[in-house]
Image 1 (tube, rainbow, N blue to C red):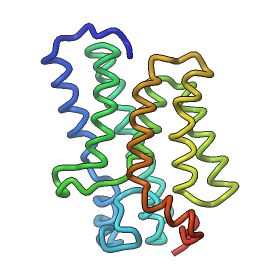
Image 2 (image 1 turned 135 degrees about the horizontal axis):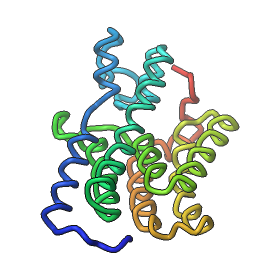
Image 3 (image 1 turned 30 degrees about the vertical axis):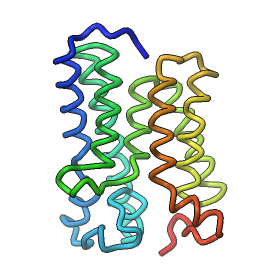
Length: 201
């Protein structure tokens, strides 16, 4: 963790900003605007890019992926610019929590992978790039979005150590654990060979 310079009130403010930003359900919004239906009644019921892809609209899925990642990065960059590095980590972490547990959707949100990757890119770009590369390589090789997410998140703390960015070790490790918890059902389906592949219905 970086040195905490900002006051407690400033950190609470950035936690709130991060949470509210993270709770914007871009996948749900885009799907409704494009007439793709209610994501919560499609596929896994998740509001993230993978489930948007199940509607058959690749453009909407890509836009969801980029917007969910962008909100994680934006929270970090704004907090870093207007406060300090500790505030940036708190804002990024709470953006992740906002995405996973949005108050507007009765705390039933996405699994946070895109937001995690965007946040990590903004906090420590070498670690973020390594995590993104891990996701892409795994997705290309196995065609399982969940497996790619789990490996990318799980290796992020390792990349933080290998690349000498220990200041993001705690936050990447903590959020990686949450991602694994959020993917508990996916892990069971992977184990049983029942997990749908990327692009499958």
